Length: 482
Image 1 (cartoon, helix red, strand yellow):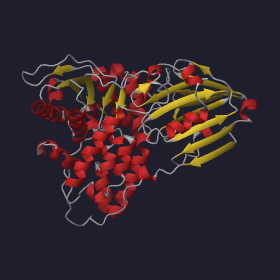
Image 2 (cartoon, rainbow, N blue to C red; image 1 turned 30 degrees about the vertical axis):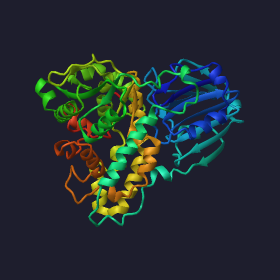
Image 3 (cartoon, helix red, strand yellow; image 1 turned 45 degrees about the vertical axis):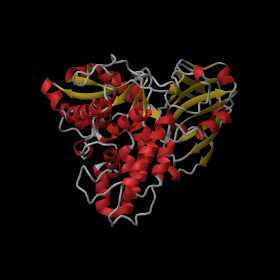
Image 4 (spheres, rainbow, N blue to C red; image 1 turned 180 degrees about the vertical axis):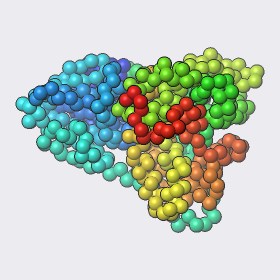
């Protein structure tokens, strides 16, 4: 009997083999997590049954590796990343729970489960998969087992945007829905700190107590700015929000001229003027030589993701979650010395839900509302495979858990009820029409246009990371060392 679990900001420091795990059954674990309404990744083994999986949006990482030595098959499952560089590892599919029956007992380390199976072990094994998505036929876990039963769950209440576009060609008021958006994100942030946990919290790292200092991954863009403002209005217990702003370059001028640094400072000034001394800014300046020094750590943590784009995004997230930088207070304000929290708020998911990418405008221009609707459904369904699994491994390698209020289960479910014409307005120019609903919500919160009406810049460009890359390389090229 053994359990590894990460759920919301809680996790087991090592695999649990105690009374908390002993009290559970595989079906109880599976049923609880399917209905808990939060992010999770887990592995559970008891009495010949193995159950493991990830939540519907893949916000927590779970990685596997299958190797074969003669007739023996070796399956290793780990919570984050392998201590050695395993090129042929794979992510456990998002939104899927695998339940093996008649499975041999594992060898267990602090962070992984290792199973060795002979042909005699494989023949009687039964596999039941509960999933929200269609599984790829080449999924490694499917290739060795003959008796497989798949139970498909309905994800439409999360993934399918409201198809009512009747307001799309008319003048429309965003303010009522924007007011509701603020309320729903406030509820999401409160619920994040009141999770339903599979095992009592005294068996887990993490606390339901809100710390006096909270970290925010902060570019100064509308996503992270909105999360910061709402969190500051909800979390009265927090004495100080530390806004971690990460940029790359060779010189001081490079750091100061990076788009994210300029936006970050402007937003930090506004927050400090309107909320008082509850904010500090952690200016993380990363030189090219430091990127090279830390590159192997970043690459190991991001696997099985391996592209140039993965490396650029992972690098920004890694240095940001490490949080080594200069702490700045506004003018003569004074505050607490920066103490990293075990989690960091981020604005992830806003673009996918609210139509924030440039390609969303392209969808609309080519195929109108139907093509945009199809595109957003696809984006939400693949956010875990594209971003969350990698980012979770990266931040966990620095001891930090990411919290994305925009991707809280109930908030995503609410967003699915909002018609697309009340999320975007592509009659407006770039930087205003995308995520129109969010920009209006920020204005309702009192923010000025120079902070609400700015075009999106991808993380690798806003931070200046892309300037250090070979101009001939493409984002989907394999990273050099991988």
